[in-house]
Image (cartoon, rainbow, N blue to C red; front, side, top):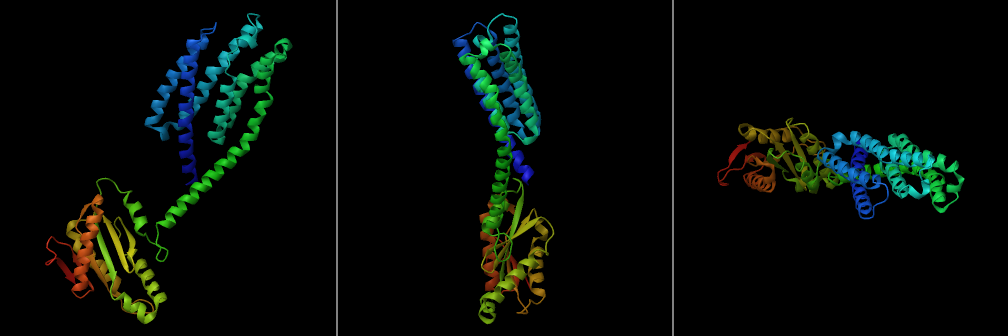
Length: 364
C-alpha cells in the first residue's frame, strides 16, 4: 500500500518537474531570442530543450505509471547534457584565453540549483546519487576554474558562482534527511486517510459495509456489470429487543451478518442497510437462478437457532437484474417486494415483478 502511495506521489512529482522545466526553457528561449548574447548557443539550447521537453511531456501524459522510471532517467541525462556541455564549453574557452568565464557564462546558476533542489525533494531517494552526479558535472569544472583564476574569483560574479556551487550546495545535504521524513509523513497521512475512509464505510456493529461503503464499492464495478439486490429484514426484531434487551438484539444482528458472509460465493457484497435490514448486491447473477438465490438466503438465515434467542426468521425482497447505475431503482424494487413478503406473513422470499399484486413468491 505504501509502495503504491509512493508511486502515485512520484508520478505527480515527475509530471510537475517536466511542466516546470518546459515552461522555464520556453522563458529562456524567448528571453535570449529577444535579447541575444554573443553566443548563439544561448538561444539555440533553450529552444531545443523546450521542444524535447514538450514531446516527453506528451509521451509521459498518456502512460505515466508504465514509463515513469524511464522518464526520470531521461530527465537526469537530459539535464546533464543540457547544462554540463555548456558549462564545459565556457570553461574550456575561458581557459584558452578566449574570454573571461565570469563575463560570458550565462545566468543559469539559479535555474540549475533550483532544478537540482526540486529533484532532490520530489524524486525518490534511490535517485539521490544521480542528483550528486548532476551537481558534480556542472559545479566541479566551475569551482576548479575559479580556484585557478583568482582574478576572476575575486569579483562579484566569481563570488556568486563559487558560493552557489560551493557552500550553498551543502544545503542539499540538509534537504536529504528531510526528504525521507517528508515522504514517510506523507505515506503515514495517506495510509491513515485510507484507513479512516474504510472505517467510515463500515458498520461499527456488524463490520460489513454501511450505505457509504456500499456506494464506494459500487463505484468500483465495471461499466457493463449488472446487479440484482436482495433486501433482508429480520422478522419481529422489535420483539427480540423488547424481550431480551438491545444488547442481545445487537448480537443477533452480528450473527445475521456472519451468516450472510457464508451463503453466496459468486461475486457480491453485503451491507447493513439500516436497523435490522441488510442488503446483498449480486454481481452479474443469472436470471433463472435469482428466485432460488433469494430463497437460499431466507432458508439459510432462518434454519438454525440463534444464540440466546433461538428461532429467528427473515423476509427477503429480490429486485430484477439491471445495470449497476440503476441501483436506486433496484433498491426500490427490492423494497417493494420485501414489503409484500412482510405483509404476506413474513419468513418468505419474494422477487419483484411488474405487477406487485402478483409477484413471484417462494414462501417457506
